[in-house]
Amino acid sequence: RINGMGRKFYGRQDFNPTLIITQMVAMQAAFFATLGIACTAALLCTGGRVELGRIFRSAEYAGEDWVALCLATVVTAVVMVALLVLVVERAKKCLDFVVTYHFFHFLTTWACGGLPVQGAWWASNIAAIVLATVVGEWCCIRAEQREIPLGRRKEDAEVLQQV
Image (cartoon, rainbow, N blue to C red):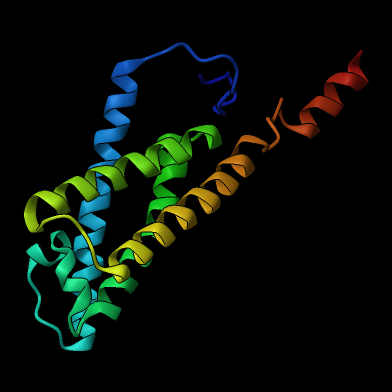
């Protein structure tokens, strides 16, 4: 909800499945897009073979480019923190959203390349989940606790002097 000053008011929220689904679709699309861009950048920097399917095959994390892929996964988590603050906005929802988009990544990886068994895949994804959740919650808490301006202080002082 927005108050008259353009700031959000965090009170009791009604259950809104359309909003939740829209937020989840936005976060999932952003996750895959960011992961794709980060993997491409990391592989170009290391001279690895750039191919979109690599982000959906856990066996790639056992090859020669495993460091670049792990780094891209962690970089994606950092970018997703900013998106959590913009899209999700609530600290108490961060864990739910992060685990959900990583769960769909797990399912996609399983469907495209089999059950992930590489330790590097699991380690980088668990690190990304922890990083995005903890930093995302911290950033959202900071945003939620910002002072809500009630007006301009100079104008408030002038009104009080007139009374």
